[in-house]
Picture (cartoon, rainbow over the protein chains, first blue to last red):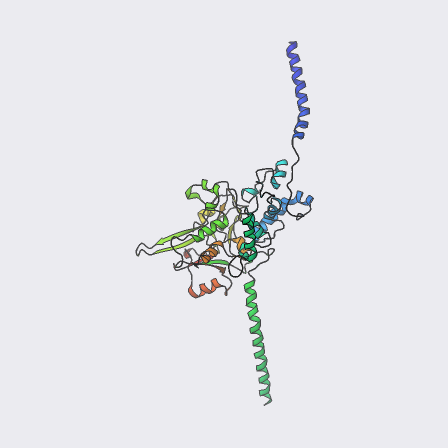
Length: 165
Length: 252
């Protein structure tokens, strides 16, 4: 009888201890997200605005683009990716299912699931030389061609330089 | 005598006025042509109606250049490896080559078939969410943000132009988002059109020297496509349905 009482008391003490200690241990284990560095100097909006409202900007932009054909780049997801998930020095680009990706670094931490990347590309156009041709200034490679329907001299030089590397 | 003098000056004035009008018309026409180039912040307008004209007599049997160009541009078909998991009858198909054989005479014709970009599209009529839509410049699209994958539009389309994505995809093109559970079809390369380009299929057909496909503004009477249609005509596939398609064919 005494033995079983002691056992119950012990168990209760353990339980109380666990209840108090559990939150402490887990919170210590979840690291703060490491936000990858972006390519550009400055974001399209101040950081605190972006943290709070980025989803609204993109929601508005997606309807404007798909339904009305407005293709401004300021709040487009494609441009976010161009800048925030640019290839690093070794040419490697993060995948959205790893926390190295700009979006998933924070979304994993805050446990908010996003489905943008079930359809949208999670990285910029994968060939790097194409990247430098397009570079966000020329809207499309159709315009890249000069009058005689061949690649321009600068483009050819750039491609040759890339080939040597 | 004095009356005659007045008449002369009037005539001179009219002559000068006519000359001035003539001079100002030429740059005006030029401006209309340039108007195609739309600023990114400007929405598409109903001033244009984009269309295509396909000359079946120039379209070679066995040639697949337009289909390949579409696949490369939009990333469907062979490009996307996870798509290979889909059954053959369920694979994506934005554009396909169709061979027509006259059983009586044995005459064979070949033509590319894709979304016909109808003026009154049945796919838009049946869509329960408004995902299937016609843009104001006549391009019929699926807004995949709204698509629930019910596939009513696929049933409604008389041209069998739409397909459904059955498998999760990876490595999509940044300019062509597409994913599992949504319906898709030819977009007339809307991303190119919006930046003053032509669809990939038309571009490749012309580049390879076949010149069987034309792209242009059906609303502009001086565009190449309108001139050609006015001169030589063009037929719609299933014209009996009264859909007023944006894609027209010659030689059918």
